[in-house]
Figure 1: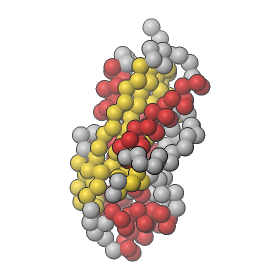
Figure 2: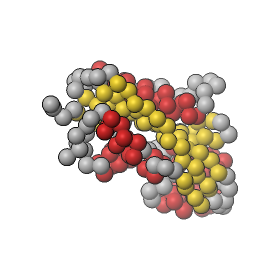
Figure 3: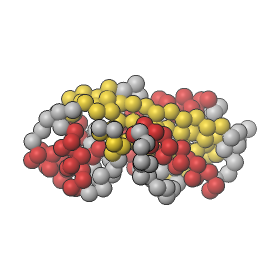
Length: 195
């Protein structure tokens, strides 16, 4: 039995770095899907839909003997799915909305076993308690880290940790963008052979 090809349907350097940690070979694949929330859709539903959509979008490019990973992350601010800010001004606005609050980040994960037509999907919640910081400190953080490609503008794996008081999750890697504990569960369910 051949080892299936692992496809990460993402060009996120953060997800690729996390996937490298569990010691498997994989290929990244860029997908282009509309990541805007649907009107009336909850943040958890948004990230679940996008995770599945990213994995499904990659299916036509790879062999039947593939396991395709899709993931998406949003921060729930007052029922709004907040994603990558992309600009300094939007990042600052996001961080200012978070000050002194406890919010939930959702990271959805999908694994599709193309050959067997089986899909595993789950959403991991992470509770984040933010410090109440002055604007100048937020601006200095944004200028040094430039976290414009991170949901909620926080790079927790680097200086972004200074913005937070507490982070609680049953899958700590979820907050960086890929819930590895859940992914290993899915890969084992897909009978992937770790070497």
